[in-house]
Amino acid sequence: MSTEENRQDPRLRLVHQLRAATVEFDLLAAEFAARHGLHPTDLRALIALLDAARAERPVTPGRLGEQLRLNSAGTTTLIDRLERLGLVRRERDTTDRRRVLLTVEPRAVDLGWSFFGPAIGTLLGAMDAFTPAELDTVERFLAAMTTATTAARTNAAHHP
Amino acid sequence: MSTEENRQDPRLRLVHQLRAATVEFDLLAAEFAARHGLHPTDLRALIALLDAARAERPVTPGRLGEQLRLNSAGTTTLIDRLERLGLVRRERDTTDRRRVLLTVEPRAVDLGWSFFGPAIGTLLGAMDAFTPAELDTVERFLAAMTTATTAARTNAAHHP
DNA sequence: CGTATTCTCTCGCTCAGCGAGATACTAGGT
DNA sequence: ACCTAGTATCTCGCTGAGCGAGAGAATACG
Image (cartoon, rainbow over all chains, first blue to last red; front, side, top):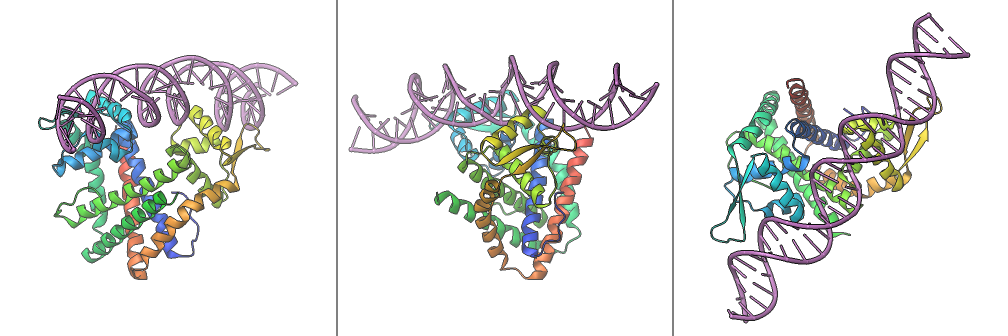
């Protein structure tokens, strides 16, 4: 996509590849968002909500806003937006009536699959060129990179 | 980070890992942006500009806006912002005087390295746990995934 | 009970990005 | 030379995402 230099260190080349993949993923997400009149934040929220739904974890506006790094006002607006689009529903928690529980509508699940389904299919297809052992290596690698990135991030956050 | 289910298909698990890595990268970028009073778009622009500078490719507002999917008005505002921060400079192209050429200030390069340098160092360190052959496999894998994602994206774009 | 705490929402504001159009320059035909 | 079409950037006015401050409602805790 961007530069086709003859990089020296294979490890640096990998960092670059990793970033290229990230950029491509983000572009795919942006494409999806734009097509459905969603803002980037809406999509991030939707993904978080679908993840939580699959894990049967209840989600409140507070938790969602925290995860997306929005303040409470922004979170309210976000949920208003998603609710207006019929993607999510607010329900008062019966045990703690200060809280609101967010439930994703079936429409949201369908929407997610309609777009990411084919994309995931393409990815799975491309994985056929690799042996199980190789995929295992890649999985370890990705896990290591994720951990390292998290470490770098929290390091940076604690080191003003 | 999100769900810790016992997924069946290792390939699906990999898709998930890939997404997790992407999310973590984006969070790191957001952390950097927030710390320096940059908007997400500013950071994307800066990365594009630094890439172009390293490849010695000249960048005009038009090209930049195209890459970031901004219209001309938004692009002008973006460059105004970057210029006000002293990260970039506008210069009229002498051969085609309709054009403006953007050059990144040394300050921008320093800024980028001050943050991503340590992060990249952490990533490189984490790669020491893998053999060159393994890293080679991972590189092929990432390239395949990037290509597949691009394909899925342009497919979706052409299939309204 | 009263007081502090927690969770969500409202209000007013700032500013990123959009659409429409202005401006300035270049290219090509005649 | 001139007129027209095309290209690159910028200006203006507007919409709306997200912020800070704080209100309102429910719970926890002394």
